[in-house]
Image 1 (cartoon, rainbow, N blue to C red):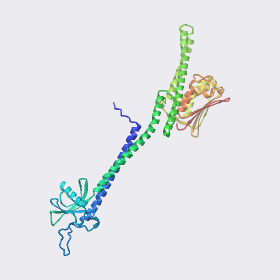
Image 2 (spheres, rainbow, N blue to C red):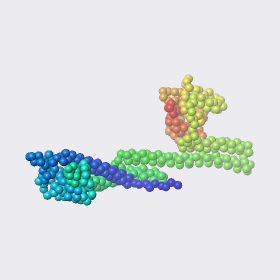
Image 3 (tube, helix red, strand yellow):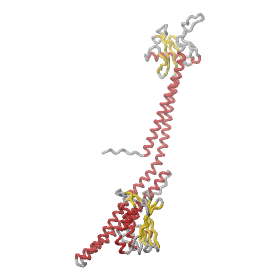
Image 4 (cartoon, rainbow, N blue to C red):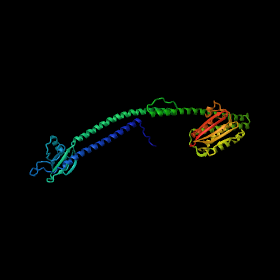
Length: 460
Protein backbone atom coordinates (compact mmCIF):
# COMPACT_ATOMS: atom_id res chain seq x y z
CA UNK A 1 0.00 0.00 0.00
CA UNK A 2 1.52 3.29 -1.07
CA UNK A 3 2.09 5.93 1.55
CA UNK A 4 -0.03 9.00 1.31
CA UNK A 5 2.00 12.09 0.56
CA UNK A 6 1.60 15.02 2.90
CA UNK A 7 -0.30 17.86 1.32
CA UNK A 8 0.84 21.42 1.89
CA UNK A 9 -1.13 24.61 1.61
CA UNK A 10 -0.67 27.20 -1.14
CA UNK A 11 0.76 29.59 1.46
CA UNK A 12 3.39 27.06 2.54
CA UNK A 13 4.37 26.26 -1.04
CA UNK A 14 4.56 29.91 -2.12
CA UNK A 15 6.63 30.88 0.92
CA UNK A 16 8.94 27.91 0.34
CA UNK A 17 9.34 28.66 -3.36
CA UNK A 18 10.00 32.39 -2.86
CA UNK A 19 12.47 31.85 -0.02
CA UNK A 20 14.25 29.08 -1.93
CA UNK A 21 14.54 31.15 -5.10
CA UNK A 22 15.77 34.24 -3.25
CA UNK A 23 18.33 32.32 -1.21
CA UNK A 24 19.57 30.56 -4.34
CA UNK A 25 19.80 33.90 -6.18
CA UNK A 26 21.71 35.57 -3.34
CA UNK A 27 24.08 32.60 -3.00
CA UNK A 28 24.86 32.85 -6.70
CA UNK A 29 25.34 36.64 -6.38
CA UNK A 30 27.66 36.26 -3.37
CA UNK A 31 29.70 33.52 -4.99
CA UNK A 32 30.02 35.54 -8.18
CA UNK A 33 30.92 38.70 -6.24
CA UNK A 34 33.56 36.92 -4.12
CA UNK A 35 35.03 35.24 -7.17
CA UNK A 36 35.27 38.49 -9.13
CA UNK A 37 36.55 40.48 -6.15
CA UNK A 38 39.19 37.84 -5.38
CA UNK A 39 40.20 37.82 -9.02
CA UNK A 40 40.52 41.60 -8.90
CA UNK A 41 42.69 41.49 -5.78
CA UNK A 42 44.91 38.75 -7.18
CA UNK A 43 45.25 40.32 -10.62
CA UNK A 44 46.13 43.73 -9.10
CA UNK A 45 48.66 42.22 -6.71
CA UNK A 46 50.20 40.02 -9.36
CA UNK A 47 50.54 42.93 -11.75
CA UNK A 48 52.34 45.01 -9.15
CA UNK A 49 54.58 42.13 -8.07
CA UNK A 50 55.36 41.21 -11.65
CA UNK A 51 56.57 44.72 -12.42
CA UNK A 52 58.47 45.00 -9.14
CA UNK A 53 60.17 41.63 -9.41
CA UNK A 54 61.84 42.69 -12.65
CA UNK A 55 64.31 44.78 -10.55
CA UNK A 56 65.20 42.00 -8.12
CA UNK A 57 68.90 41.13 -8.47
CA UNK A 58 69.89 44.52 -9.92
CA UNK A 59 72.42 45.70 -7.39
CA UNK A 60 72.76 49.48 -7.03
CA UNK A 61 76.33 50.76 -7.65
CA UNK A 62 78.28 53.92 -6.87
CA UNK A 63 79.81 56.32 -9.41
CA UNK A 64 82.84 54.08 -9.83
CA UNK A 65 80.74 51.03 -10.55
CA UNK A 66 81.19 49.30 -7.18
CA UNK A 67 78.09 47.67 -5.62
CA UNK A 68 76.45 49.38 -2.67
CA UNK A 69 76.39 46.59 -0.12
CA UNK A 70 74.20 48.50 2.31
CA UNK A 71 71.48 49.14 -0.23
CA UNK A 72 68.39 47.02 -0.75
CA UNK A 73 66.69 46.18 -3.99
CA UNK A 74 65.54 49.11 -6.00
CA UNK A 75 62.23 49.67 -7.83
CA UNK A 76 62.63 51.86 -10.92
CA UNK A 77 58.92 52.81 -10.84
CA UNK A 78 58.31 55.17 -7.91
CA UNK A 79 54.56 54.62 -8.34
CA UNK A 80 54.97 51.33 -6.46
CA UNK A 81 56.98 52.79 -3.62
CA UNK A 82 53.85 53.15 -1.52
CA UNK A 83 52.27 49.87 -2.74
CA UNK A 84 55.00 47.24 -2.72
CA UNK A 85 57.20 46.48 0.29
CA UNK A 86 60.67 44.99 -0.08
CA UNK A 87 62.88 43.03 2.26
CA UNK A 88 66.00 40.86 2.37
CA UNK A 89 65.62 37.77 4.58
CA UNK A 90 68.32 35.33 5.69
CA UNK A 91 67.82 31.59 6.18
CA UNK A 92 66.67 32.18 9.78
CA UNK A 93 63.87 34.53 8.68
CA UNK A 94 65.77 37.56 9.98
CA UNK A 95 65.11 40.82 8.15
CA UNK A 96 68.43 42.08 6.80
CA UNK A 97 67.02 45.08 5.03
CA UNK A 98 63.34 46.10 5.18
CA UNK A 99 63.28 48.79 2.44
CA UNK A 100 65.35 51.27 0.53
CA UNK A 101 62.93 54.20 0.55
CA UNK A 102 61.86 56.08 3.65
CA UNK A 103 58.84 54.21 5.03
CA UNK A 104 56.38 54.80 7.81
CA UNK A 105 55.79 52.69 10.89
CA UNK A 106 52.94 50.78 9.24
CA UNK A 107 55.26 49.58 6.48
CA UNK A 108 57.81 48.35 9.03
CA UNK A 109 55.03 46.65 10.89
CA UNK A 110 53.89 45.01 7.65
CA UNK A 111 57.41 43.70 7.03
CA UNK A 112 57.76 42.25 10.51
CA UNK A 113 54.25 40.76 10.43
CA UNK A 114 54.75 39.33 6.95
CA UNK A 115 58.10 37.69 7.77
CA UNK A 116 56.66 36.35 11.02
CA UNK A 117 53.88 34.75 8.99
CA UNK A 118 56.41 33.12 6.68
CA UNK A 119 58.30 31.73 9.65
CA UNK A 120 55.22 30.50 11.58
CA UNK A 121 53.83 28.73 8.51
CA UNK A 122 57.29 27.33 7.70
CA UNK A 123 57.22 28.64 4.15
CA UNK A 124 60.45 27.74 2.37
CA UNK A 125 62.66 30.64 1.33
CA UNK A 126 63.10 29.76 -2.29
CA UNK A 127 62.24 31.09 -5.69
CA UNK A 128 58.46 31.55 -5.97
CA UNK A 129 56.31 33.81 -8.08
CA UNK A 130 53.11 35.47 -6.96
CA UNK A 131 52.16 33.42 -3.87
CA UNK A 132 49.50 34.15 -1.25
CA UNK A 133 49.83 34.35 2.54
CA UNK A 134 47.06 34.75 5.11
CA UNK A 135 48.32 35.56 8.59
CA UNK A 136 46.60 37.04 11.64
CA UNK A 137 43.68 38.49 9.75
CA UNK A 138 46.03 39.92 7.13
CA UNK A 139 46.39 39.05 3.46
CA UNK A 140 49.64 39.29 1.53
CA UNK A 141 50.74 38.49 -2.01
CA UNK A 142 54.47 38.06 -2.52
CA UNK A 143 57.30 37.07 -4.82
CA UNK A 144 60.64 35.59 -3.59
CA UNK A 145 63.97 35.27 -5.41
CA UNK A 146 67.12 33.73 -3.90
CA UNK A 147 70.30 35.78 -4.29
CA UNK A 148 72.56 33.95 -6.72
CA UNK A 149 75.75 35.29 -5.08
CA UNK A 150 74.53 34.63 -1.54
CA UNK A 151 72.17 31.65 -1.38
CA UNK A 152 71.44 32.34 2.30
CA UNK A 153 69.75 35.63 1.42
CA UNK A 154 66.30 35.85 -0.19
CA UNK A 155 64.86 39.00 -1.74
CA UNK A 156 61.12 39.40 -1.17
CA UNK A 157 58.62 41.78 -2.72
CA UNK A 158 55.21 41.69 -1.01
CA UNK A 159 52.03 43.71 -1.08
CA UNK A 160 49.50 44.06 1.73
CA UNK A 161 45.92 43.50 0.49
CA UNK A 162 44.39 43.38 3.97
CA UNK A 163 42.28 46.48 3.46
CA UNK A 164 40.68 45.04 0.32
CA UNK A 165 40.30 41.69 2.10
CA UNK A 166 38.44 43.39 4.95
CA UNK A 167 36.40 45.38 2.44
CA UNK A 168 35.37 42.11 0.81
CA UNK A 169 34.27 40.71 4.17
CA UNK A 170 32.32 43.86 5.00
CA UNK A 171 30.61 43.75 1.61
CA UNK A 172 29.73 40.08 2.22
CA UNK A 173 28.21 41.02 5.55
CA UNK A 174 26.31 43.85 3.88
CA UNK A 175 25.01 41.42 1.25
CA UNK A 176 23.84 39.04 3.98
CA UNK A 177 22.03 41.89 5.75
CA UNK A 178 20.41 42.90 2.46
CA UNK A 179 19.44 39.27 1.83
CA UNK A 180 17.79 38.90 5.22
CA UNK A 181 16.00 42.23 4.87
CA UNK A 182 14.74 41.55 1.35
CA UNK A 183 13.83 37.95 2.24
CA UNK A 184 11.75 39.04 5.23
CA UNK A 185 10.01 41.69 3.12
CA UNK A 186 9.42 39.26 0.25
CA UNK A 187 8.05 36.58 2.58
CA UNK A 188 5.71 39.13 4.14
CA UNK A 189 4.42 40.22 0.73
CA UNK A 190 4.14 36.60 -0.43
CA UNK A 191 2.21 35.70 2.71
CA UNK A 192 -0.41 38.37 2.07
CA UNK A 193 -0.60 37.43 -1.63
CA UNK A 194 -1.06 33.77 -0.71
CA UNK A 195 -3.81 34.75 1.71
CA UNK A 196 -5.56 36.56 -1.12
CA UNK A 197 -5.28 33.47 -3.31
CA UNK A 198 -6.14 30.91 -0.63
CA UNK A 199 -9.22 32.69 0.72
CA UNK A 200 -11.38 32.38 -2.44
CA UNK A 201 -10.08 28.84 -2.95
CA UNK A 202 -11.28 27.87 0.53
CA UNK A 203 -14.66 29.49 -0.12
CA UNK A 204 -15.01 27.63 -3.44
CA UNK A 205 -13.90 24.36 -1.82
CA UNK A 206 -16.62 24.72 0.82
CA UNK A 207 -19.07 25.57 -1.97
CA UNK A 208 -18.09 22.38 -3.84
CA UNK A 209 -18.50 20.37 -0.65
CA UNK A 210 -22.05 21.68 -0.23
CA UNK A 211 -22.79 20.70 -3.83
CA UNK A 212 -21.52 17.20 -3.08
CA UNK A 213 -23.89 17.04 -0.12
CA UNK A 214 -26.82 17.81 -2.40
CA UNK A 215 -27.28 21.45 -1.40
CA UNK A 216 -27.54 23.31 -4.69
CA UNK A 217 -27.46 26.92 -3.49
CA UNK A 218 -25.41 29.29 -5.62
CA UNK A 219 -22.65 31.43 -4.13
CA UNK A 220 -22.95 35.22 -4.29
CA UNK A 221 -19.54 36.10 -2.80
CA UNK A 222 -17.53 38.51 -4.94
CA UNK A 223 -13.89 37.77 -5.75
CA UNK A 224 -11.36 40.36 -6.88
CA UNK A 225 -9.40 37.98 -9.11
CA UNK A 226 -10.70 37.25 -12.60
CA UNK A 227 -9.86 33.54 -12.42
CA UNK A 228 -11.68 33.05 -9.11
CA UNK A 229 -14.66 34.98 -10.44
CA UNK A 230 -14.81 32.84 -13.59
CA UNK A 231 -14.52 29.66 -11.50
CA UNK A 232 -17.35 30.87 -9.27
CA UNK A 233 -19.55 31.55 -12.28
CA UNK A 234 -18.79 28.12 -13.76
CA UNK A 235 -19.60 26.43 -10.46
CA UNK A 236 -22.83 28.41 -10.13
CA UNK A 237 -23.85 27.35 -13.63
CA UNK A 238 -23.01 23.75 -12.77
CA UNK A 239 -25.06 24.05 -9.59
CA UNK A 240 -28.06 25.30 -11.56
CA UNK A 241 -27.72 22.39 -13.99
CA UNK A 242 -27.42 19.89 -11.14
CA UNK A 243 -30.44 21.38 -9.42
CA UNK A 244 -32.45 21.11 -12.62
CA UNK A 245 -31.15 17.60 -13.28
CA UNK A 246 -32.04 16.53 -9.76
CA UNK A 247 -35.55 17.92 -10.18
CA UNK A 248 -35.86 16.17 -13.55
CA UNK A 249 -34.71 12.91 -12.04
CA UNK A 250 -37.24 13.16 -9.22
CA UNK A 251 -39.99 13.87 -11.73
CA UNK A 252 -38.73 11.07 -13.95
CA UNK A 253 -38.83 8.47 -11.20
CA UNK A 254 -42.21 9.65 -10.01
CA UNK A 255 -43.67 9.41 -13.52
CA UNK A 256 -41.86 6.13 -14.23
CA UNK A 257 -43.19 4.56 -11.05
CA UNK A 258 -46.68 5.73 -11.96
CA UNK A 259 -46.42 4.38 -15.51
CA UNK A 260 -45.07 1.07 -14.25
CA UNK A 261 -47.68 0.79 -11.54
CA UNK A 262 -50.63 1.14 -13.94
CA UNK A 263 -49.96 -1.94 -16.15
CA UNK A 264 -48.87 -3.93 -13.11
CA UNK A 265 -52.14 -3.15 -11.38
CA UNK A 266 -54.09 -4.15 -14.49
CA UNK A 267 -52.15 -7.42 -14.71
CA UNK A 268 -52.77 -8.13 -11.03
CA UNK A 269 -56.49 -7.37 -11.24
CA UNK A 270 -56.87 -9.48 -14.38
CA UNK A 271 -55.04 -12.38 -12.78
CA UNK A 272 -57.31 -12.17 -9.70
CA UNK A 273 -60.36 -12.04 -11.99
CA UNK A 274 -59.24 -15.21 -13.71
CA UNK A 275 -58.53 -16.82 -10.33
CA UNK A 276 -62.05 -16.17 -9.06
CA UNK A 277 -63.72 -16.89 -12.44
CA UNK A 278 -64.82 -13.31 -12.82
CA UNK A 279 -62.93 -12.92 -16.13
CA UNK A 280 -62.68 -15.53 -18.83
CA UNK A 281 -59.21 -17.08 -19.05
CA UNK A 282 -58.74 -16.41 -22.75
CA UNK A 283 -59.86 -12.81 -22.49
CA UNK A 284 -57.80 -12.26 -19.37
CA UNK A 285 -54.73 -13.76 -21.00
CA UNK A 286 -55.01 -11.33 -23.88
CA UNK A 287 -55.22 -8.40 -21.45
CA UNK A 288 -52.21 -9.66 -19.49
CA UNK A 289 -50.20 -10.19 -22.67
CA UNK A 290 -51.06 -6.72 -23.95
CA UNK A 291 -50.15 -5.03 -20.67
CA UNK A 292 -46.99 -7.10 -20.34
CA UNK A 293 -45.86 -6.04 -23.82
CA UNK A 294 -46.55 -2.41 -22.99
CA UNK A 295 -44.73 -2.78 -19.68
CA UNK A 296 -41.70 -4.41 -21.38
CA UNK A 297 -41.65 -1.65 -24.01
CA UNK A 298 -41.76 1.03 -21.31
CA UNK A 299 -38.98 -0.59 -19.29
CA UNK A 300 -36.85 -0.93 -22.42
CA UNK A 301 -37.35 2.77 -23.22
CA UNK A 302 -36.43 3.79 -19.67
CA UNK A 303 -33.27 1.68 -19.73
CA UNK A 304 -32.34 2.99 -23.18
CA UNK A 305 -32.80 6.62 -22.07
CA UNK A 306 -30.74 5.92 -18.95
CA UNK A 307 -27.85 4.58 -21.08
CA UNK A 308 -27.99 7.68 -23.27
CA UNK A 309 -27.83 10.03 -20.31
CA UNK A 310 -24.99 8.10 -18.69
CA UNK A 311 -23.00 8.40 -21.96
CA UNK A 312 -22.32 4.67 -21.96
CA UNK A 313 -19.30 3.83 -24.16
CA UNK A 314 -21.02 0.82 -25.80
CA UNK A 315 -21.95 2.81 -28.94
CA UNK A 316 -20.47 1.21 -32.08
CA UNK A 317 -20.38 3.70 -34.95
CA UNK A 318 -19.60 3.09 -38.61
CA UNK A 319 -20.19 5.02 -41.81
CA UNK A 320 -23.44 4.03 -43.48
CA UNK A 321 -26.01 5.38 -45.91
CA UNK A 322 -28.81 7.00 -43.92
CA UNK A 323 -31.27 6.41 -46.80
CA UNK A 324 -30.97 2.65 -46.32
CA UNK A 325 -31.54 2.89 -42.56
CA UNK A 326 -34.68 4.99 -43.06
CA UNK A 327 -35.97 2.65 -45.79
CA UNK A 328 -35.75 -0.68 -43.97
CA UNK A 329 -36.91 0.88 -40.69
CA UNK A 330 -40.04 2.18 -42.44
CA UNK A 331 -40.64 -1.25 -44.01
CA UNK A 332 -41.15 -2.72 -40.55
CA UNK A 333 -44.33 -0.68 -40.34
CA UNK A 334 -45.68 -1.85 -43.71
CA UNK A 335 -48.56 -3.76 -42.07
CA UNK A 336 -49.63 -0.66 -40.15
CA UNK A 337 -49.31 1.45 -43.29
CA UNK A 338 -51.63 -0.97 -45.11
CA UNK A 339 -54.12 -1.02 -42.24
CA UNK A 340 -54.41 2.79 -42.39
CA UNK A 341 -54.30 2.74 -46.18
CA UNK A 342 -51.22 4.98 -46.25
CA UNK A 343 -48.50 4.74 -48.87
CA UNK A 344 -45.30 6.27 -47.39
CA UNK A 345 -43.46 8.82 -49.51
CA UNK A 346 -39.65 8.98 -49.70
CA UNK A 347 -37.94 12.30 -50.42
CA UNK A 348 -34.35 11.06 -50.63
CA UNK A 349 -31.20 12.37 -52.30
CA UNK A 350 -30.06 10.54 -55.42
CA UNK A 351 -26.55 10.13 -53.99
CA UNK A 352 -25.74 8.19 -50.80
CA UNK A 353 -26.08 10.23 -47.58
CA UNK A 354 -23.10 8.93 -45.62
CA UNK A 355 -22.80 9.47 -41.90
CA UNK A 356 -20.94 7.80 -39.00
CA UNK A 357 -23.52 6.45 -36.55
CA UNK A 358 -24.73 3.44 -34.62
CA UNK A 359 -27.55 1.95 -36.69
CA UNK A 360 -29.51 1.02 -33.58
CA UNK A 361 -29.66 4.69 -32.57
CA UNK A 362 -31.00 5.98 -35.89
CA UNK A 363 -33.40 3.03 -36.14
CA UNK A 364 -34.75 3.96 -32.73
CA UNK A 365 -35.24 7.57 -33.83
CA UNK A 366 -37.07 6.65 -37.04
CA UNK A 367 -39.20 4.01 -35.29
CA UNK A 368 -40.42 6.50 -32.70
CA UNK A 369 -41.10 9.22 -35.27
CA UNK A 370 -42.87 6.87 -37.72
CA UNK A 371 -45.00 5.25 -35.01
CA UNK A 372 -45.87 8.71 -33.76
CA UNK A 373 -46.78 9.81 -37.31
CA UNK A 374 -48.98 6.71 -37.79
CA UNK A 375 -51.08 7.62 -34.76
CA UNK A 376 -51.93 11.05 -36.16
CA UNK A 377 -51.71 10.78 -39.99
CA UNK A 378 -54.87 10.93 -42.14
CA UNK A 379 -53.51 9.74 -45.49
CA UNK A 380 -49.87 10.82 -45.97
CA UNK A 381 -46.51 10.19 -44.33
CA UNK A 382 -43.30 11.44 -45.93
CA UNK A 383 -39.73 10.55 -44.96
CA UNK A 384 -36.92 12.93 -45.92
CA UNK A 385 -33.17 12.27 -46.16
CA UNK A 386 -31.02 14.90 -47.89
CA UNK A 387 -27.71 16.71 -47.76
CA UNK A 388 -27.81 20.49 -47.60
CA UNK A 389 -24.40 22.14 -47.55
CA UNK A 390 -22.53 20.91 -44.50
CA UNK A 391 -25.71 19.50 -42.94
CA UNK A 392 -27.78 16.34 -43.24
CA UNK A 393 -31.55 16.70 -42.92
CA UNK A 394 -33.81 13.87 -41.80
CA UNK A 395 -37.54 14.43 -41.60
CA UNK A 396 -40.84 12.68 -40.88
CA UNK A 397 -44.06 14.42 -41.97
CA UNK A 398 -47.69 13.46 -41.44
CA UNK A 399 -50.85 15.22 -42.60
CA UNK A 400 -52.75 14.77 -39.36
CA UNK A 401 -54.27 17.40 -37.10
CA UNK A 402 -52.00 20.11 -35.76
CA UNK A 403 -50.45 19.79 -32.31
CA UNK A 404 -52.15 22.16 -29.92
CA UNK A 405 -50.30 25.26 -28.79
CA UNK A 406 -50.55 23.93 -25.25
CA UNK A 407 -48.80 20.64 -26.06
CA UNK A 408 -46.24 21.83 -28.62
CA UNK A 409 -43.65 23.27 -26.16
CA UNK A 410 -43.69 20.06 -24.07
CA UNK A 411 -43.75 17.21 -26.59
CA UNK A 412 -40.08 16.32 -25.90
CA UNK A 413 -40.57 16.31 -22.11
CA UNK A 414 -40.46 12.96 -20.39
CA UNK A 415 -43.81 11.38 -19.63
CA UNK A 416 -45.70 14.28 -21.15
CA UNK A 417 -48.83 12.92 -22.75
CA UNK A 418 -50.31 14.63 -25.74
CA UNK A 419 -53.43 13.51 -27.48
CA UNK A 420 -53.12 9.79 -28.42
CA UNK A 421 -49.84 9.52 -26.55
CA UNK A 422 -48.67 6.08 -25.37
CA UNK A 423 -46.39 6.59 -22.37
CA UNK A 424 -44.77 9.97 -23.05
CA UNK A 425 -41.16 8.88 -23.39
CA UNK A 426 -40.65 8.15 -27.11
CA UNK A 427 -39.97 11.72 -28.27
CA UNK A 428 -37.70 12.41 -25.32
CA UNK A 429 -35.59 9.43 -26.46
CA UNK A 430 -35.51 10.87 -29.99
CA UNK A 431 -34.22 14.21 -28.73
CA UNK A 432 -31.64 12.56 -26.45
CA UNK A 433 -30.23 10.49 -29.33
CA UNK A 434 -30.09 13.45 -31.73
CA UNK A 435 -28.42 15.62 -29.07
CA UNK A 436 -25.85 12.89 -28.35
CA UNK A 437 -24.73 13.18 -32.00
CA UNK A 438 -24.39 16.95 -31.74
CA UNK A 439 -27.52 17.57 -33.79
CA UNK A 440 -30.86 19.22 -33.11
CA UNK A 441 -34.51 18.42 -33.76
CA UNK A 442 -37.25 20.90 -34.63
CA UNK A 443 -40.99 20.47 -34.96
CA UNK A 444 -43.50 22.56 -36.87
CA UNK A 445 -47.23 21.93 -36.82
CA UNK A 446 -50.20 23.63 -38.49
CA UNK A 447 -53.41 22.76 -40.27
CA UNK A 448 -51.53 21.19 -43.19
CA UNK A 449 -49.69 18.68 -40.96
CA UNK A 450 -46.74 18.14 -38.60
CA UNK A 451 -43.06 17.86 -39.51
CA UNK A 452 -40.19 16.64 -37.34
CA UNK A 453 -36.88 17.78 -38.85
CA UNK A 454 -33.47 16.53 -37.64
CA UNK A 455 -30.31 18.44 -38.52
CA UNK A 456 -26.92 16.71 -38.27
CA UNK A 457 -23.44 17.92 -39.10
CA UNK A 458 -21.68 15.88 -41.78
CA UNK A 459 -18.73 15.39 -39.42
CA UNK A 460 -20.29 13.71 -36.40
